[in-house]
Image (cartoon, rainbow, N blue to C red; front, side, top):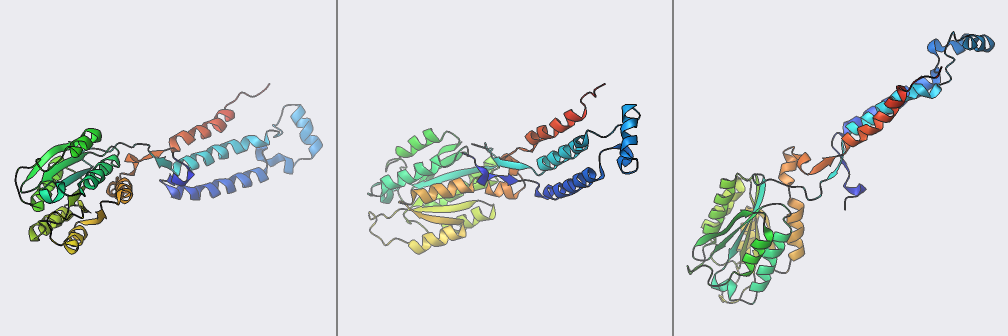
Length: 307
């Protein structure tokens, strides 16, 4: 639920106009409300007599002059652009998207860590909101299992069905998966893409680093979910995974860091787009509604005078 802590001002410089309006209002009220300030120059009994004859306005409506300043203050407040985040703000397919690249080779799918990998992938999908996601699976070759879609429920069910028989090609070539992820983002015209590689580190080499650098050069971000597997029997290349994520501008997550991954994905939504002055895609400007406050004193200024 949106609260005051989420309130931001799109045009904060308009706050400087409020003290000026207040100062003019105080000055106007001190000078009086009568025409020409006759009260300061004419004796009170003569002013009362002239008012009785209907010759002058005695200025009994002292507060009427403040209505214009009240309207001006409300307009300045509206122009500051108070805004709150849009609930479930829709993004666009050609603005941002996420690609999950999951290693389904034997060293992953036959290991006891595999259920945790599936859980991490489904958790990532649940944190995307309205952002589209695609799924790539790889082993000895890479395949696009699902194109960019906002149907995260169906995509999560697809992830749950992955096993050692999903990709018939034996081996482990993550570089092909990253190249295909780059192709998916390019074809969709994604401006703020993110690739999440699920791997145990098998197959990492110079080709993978070049693919990660290519992603970074196009503005995409590469993060890695590292699975601690034992099927391959080889030492885990932790340093290579760290270097890969650093080159891709992302982070490394263990299969038990579900909350950290979800928080990262949720917080990153639209970050680059906000830097491109597209903040109104994510914020709801309340200033237009505050203009109603300015209409109230203006309406009072047009009320009919008594006889």
